[in-house]
Image (tube, rainbow, N blue to C red; front, side):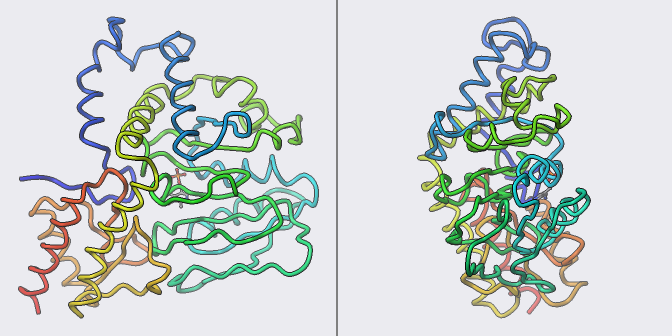
Length: 359
Ligand code: PMP
């Protein structure tokens, strides 16, 4: 039986990448050492770090001249704190679009920073069943606007970046390299790696180099983009294995045709599931169709006992981790880049059969 993992994160990785990791796990590039025991000061690691940075910039259509790539730890959650600490220097005032739980978490962490005004300028609370519209009138006296481009829990995503005359910061954790954006519109992008890129334990930050020199120098080293960038993400021991897997995933993404090709496949995959939801009248997804996420699809049957039966029966059929987030209940299918089209087809077929059996 083929197993498909629909988990929201840590999430499925490309089979090809896992096979490569396995094949060279005990002997990395003829060194006789495992990647798990290689020094972060070794030429093997510094080479792979440089390659990973270059591949990431290439996939995002960004240049090394303009953007710095940082490989950090602490999850996307630590970025909720690092972004304001480093970027909120001029107005001490930051704007947030509240599109869901993770945006709220990001705001809550920013509010813990002394003398920082945190303003919610648009919201889709409490239902979060659409992506809030962002409109700016007049000069924006904010250090930046923070967006969470994909709402992992409620299943909404931002389709078009807002036109705003202020620095743009994006938490792209759950549609990173899965949905195409003009990445050069962002001043800073961050993403926890465990959905679309690598095992948990790595966070990617892509930041405009021109901003680095304006950042405060008095921050503790591990919280300072400036100091981390000056040491090329090796200010302390970086997560070597995660960066290695990320590099393999980035190579795989290039071989698949890059971000726009991935988005096209992701659309196809998501469409299969949304079609069943809309056409059977058995499943429900509350999100405004135009704002539906490509990567996280929450749905229910409207009956929690039946939802539970769905989850257990699906599990037995090899469709794993479809349980919804505790805030929403029901089911959630995460269809990140590494989920093959065949996985979405298998889920679509299962949903149709389950609806027939339980109508
Ligand atoms: N932002 C978003 C959009 C997320 O989905 C998540 C995790 N699900 C986070 C932030 C938090 O990420 P981490 O666990 O890496 O701190």
